[in-house]
Length: 108
Image (cartoon, rainbow, N blue to C red):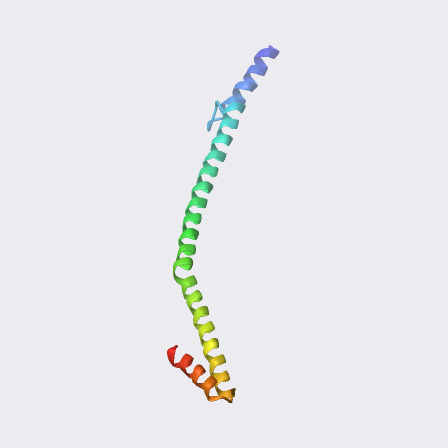
């Protein structure tokens, strides 16, 4: 009698489980591992796409902006050299030195 009552309670309790009646602990663990593996794959794909976009941006900087910066620095150095020679030309007292600086300025 007691056994029948316990079985009746157990049957009533089991009938309410309609979503996943056979969800054992092993299946729950496998499901959690599969979800984590899927999340890892999505995050890895996102990281690869982001690194590729970053690589494209760095390539644009290296190919376009840096050579322009280098050339601007060379122009600035050349302009400073010309200004120094002009200043020396104006400050020199001897005509030979003035002629030397003058030829340097006209050759640039």
